[in-house]
Amino acid sequence: MTGPNVEMWDVYELTLNGPQDGNPYQDVRFGAEFRHGHRVVPADGFYDGDGVYRVRFMPDRTGDWTCTTRSSAAGLDGVEAGFTCTPAGPGNHGPVRVSGPRHFRYADGSPYLPFGTTCYHWTHDEDEKLEEQTLRSLATSPFNKVRMCLLPTQAMDPPRLPFPGRTPGALDKTRFDPVFFTHFEQRVRDLRELGVEADIVLFHPYDRGHWGVDDMTPDEDAFFVRYALARLAAYRNVWWSIANEYDFNNAKTVEDWDRIGRLVQRADPYQHLRSIHNGTRMYEYERIYDFGKPWTTHQSIQHWDATFTSGWLAACPKPVVLDEIGYEGKIGRRWGNITPRALLRQFWHGMVAGGYVGHGECYPEQDPDGAAWVSRGGRLHGDTAPRIAFLRGLWEEGPEDTFVYFGDRQHAHRDIDLPDGSWDAHLVDTWEMTVTPLPGPHRDRVRVPLDHRPDLALRLRKAT
Image (cartoon, rainbow, N blue to C red):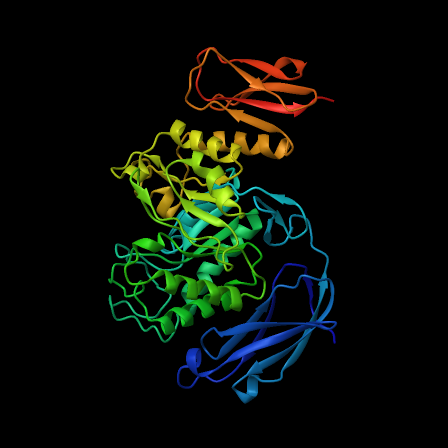
């Protein structure tokens, strides 16, 4: 069977015309089975409005694929099609997977170090100028993952919502707005072209009953989740965050979140990364999820102290990503006014302990339209981002290097015991972004001259 050529881990899409009567979102079941040799992969399709039905698929093996549609509508059932999967092109490494108890890799085996940032609702206003500025900012930043929401908050008044309607509390949750989703998935594709992962937040507690999307019924939750996955799962740069600050949503229990997490696990043909994010009363308490549950792939944690990372890794053998540790900025909330040095120190503490740390900025007064990066994107104004780029460069340059971080301490010097062997040592100024070799090589122990300066680290590399 002839058909188009599709890169491995890219998107094949089959589009058909079908019934428009009644409510096709609920009345018509539609999907397809994709075959490669003896392997069969089912994928849900979706109704895209105006009588258009689509099914998307992300192939993970080269060669010829065929597909056969399955539908409750006779005209959409049993349609056959096919395509040829070609090798992945430059920059296409496939979806990110967990690699062992601490790390991540792309599907092609390339290492992936998550350096994430947060732009929760950067797509919702459909402000093309601001969104394009966000993409330009990301293109020159160190960030390769963005946390972004599907559902609106109480304070928002966007031009479109995932469900039809504009009246608070009266959205039609039996249907979807295809225009909203078309716009959202275009931005997911834009991130893919930049090599940025889209960590899509499915639920959150910030509606507070206004639009009626934080207290949906289990059936409404499942309806929403299945549609979102049918539209978005075929994009290789997608992660699923079941909820942001799950424990602040009083309408749902832990059992509800587990039910939704297991549904995402079952309904995603590609098994993208899945997690859930706890809330915290900054500097008071936190309720970290039980990441030992099988449906979670990694630990997505909110906490103000990255030095706990080693404990989280010891308690659960899954990678730790501190997606929120507080945001650099100057707003009145404690979570949005930490200093650049404080945020950078948390990055170093978390990375040295074997985890990964997320970024955010809250400087709305520095943008003409009052947009804060953490909510709407735009421009990066803070001092942390270039230093995170420096940190990322060090980790990517020497994946086998060992670091000792001295944080905000101002010692005259520190004596560091060395592992067996001969080591080159470098003094790293994490704030000034310099690397200075210490005369060596060194064995057994090295004295590190710190000269009472904070924000220094020691890099150890096996001597050649």
